[in-house]
Amino acid sequence: MLRLFVIEMKNLTQEQEDFESVLICAIRYCLGRRTYMPHIVIQFVEERIDTLSQQTITCIIRDIENFNHGGLIGDPDIDDPAWKSFLYKLKNEQQERTRNGR
Image (cartoon, rainbow, N blue to C red; front, side, top):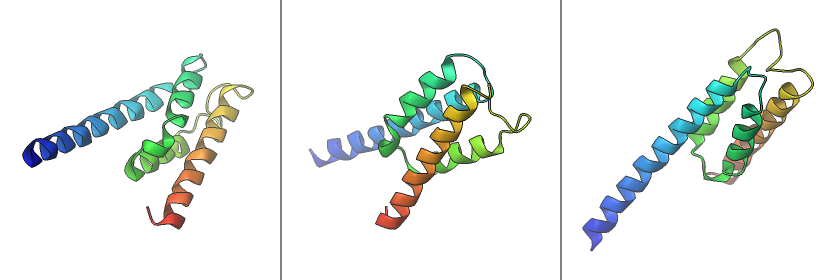
């Protein structure tokens, strides 16, 4: 029984890693796009932000900060504010975890 539990935990960890990798890919795909897709991906990730690993949050923050297309991330009136709000939420989550020792 214990062996089965350990195997399930390993699979869950691998599944979580795979899931987070796909989220990172989705974010990278959406950076700079002027379509509906960035908003779908941002909302999807925001709803799950508390389940993401610290490594994934750090990676997403870095990707957003390193993306520079004339100082904007997509449309200045629609996409850019959404990305900046998302970045703010990610950084807040990161700071909360640091304060709480997570």
